Amino acid sequence: MRLNLPLATILYAVCLPFPTLSCAQTIIKLTTPSSGYLIAPVSINGSGPYPFLLDTGSNTTLVRNELLDTLGISSQKSDPC
Image 1 (cartoon, rainbow, N blue to C red):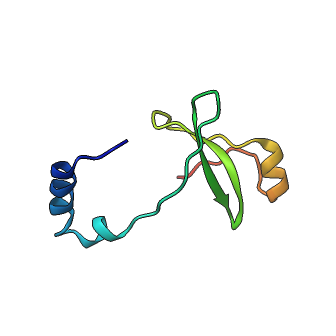
Image 2: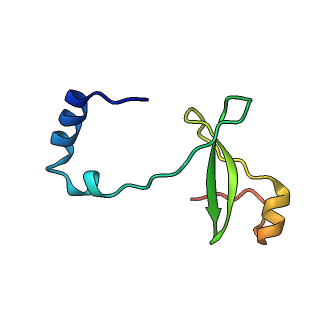
């Protein structure tokens, strides 16, 4: 995707007064296999990276039981409250 210069200038001007917005960035390389889905490298508890499907419309994160077992993480659902 190519960002045109006027739009980039406007975005920079909007972020300039907010240092946390303009400085706090993490850039990752997404891969796109033949399926067309976006795959993001994810680290869990310092291990990885593991390939995770990036779904911006999902409100749930799924992790394979095999990976949880490898990492020593319980696969039981927990209530955050």
